[in-house]
Length: 64
Ligand code: SF4
Image 1: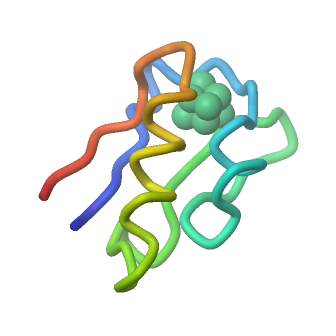
Image 2 (image 1 turned 60 degrees about the vertical axis):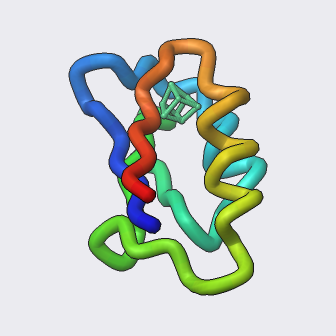
C-alpha cells in the first residue's frame, strides 16, 4: 500500500499527521506530505485509511 498527499488539495489541517505521524509529516504551515516515499509499513494500513477518511479536503490518495 502507498499513500500520497495531493498538494493542490491539502489545506494544512494536519489531521493526517495527528492520526498517523508514522505516515505523514507537516511543514511550518501544516501542509502534509507522505513519509518514506509513501510506502505504508505492514500493520499501518488501517491508519492510512483512517487518515484518508478524516482528511476534509479529500487530499489523501491510497494505492492498494
Ligand atoms: S488532513 Fe488532508 S488537508 Fe489536512 S494536512 Fe492532511 S492531507 Fe492536508
